[in-house]
Amino acid sequence: MKPVKSTNVLLTIAIFTVGILFLNSCKSYYIPIDSFKQQFTITDSSQLKSVILGGGALLYTEKYLTKDIDSFDCIDKKGRHHSLRMSPKLEVAISYQKGKKARKAYFYLDRTYVGKDSVTGYRSRFFGLPKSIPLQNLKQVKVQNGHKNFYYLNP
Image (tube, rainbow, N blue to C red; front, top):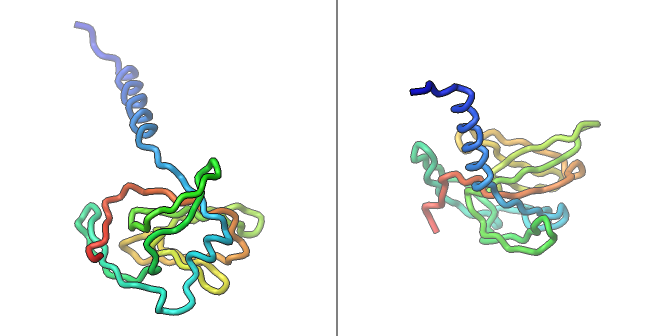
């Protein structure tokens, strides 16, 4: 019996991994910046609702305030309009300019708020790490399903 070469095993694992990633790739949607400002601006607390989040790897629960919207408008990469249902699984990648460098920040969409002069989002469900970005620096807002096991416990 011939011994199995480690390079063949590694190559097989690499091909399998790339195949799985390709099959599970997320569809991305874009929210034009003016539309993002209009849909996600918070002017007072009457625009917020309390939600209880459940799920995650450790059956985590958390109570927090989120924008009181059931769905939001966006477009796909072909320019077709869509209305997506708000979900704690949705993540947003915000591209922005900081000085001469292009940057990207990742937040949970239901924990992202537009204020008077900045957008603030939370990068973690566990550590409460808000980050603010000046609105004039925004370049692109991209949304996708993060495929994390989070769900709302209250309707």
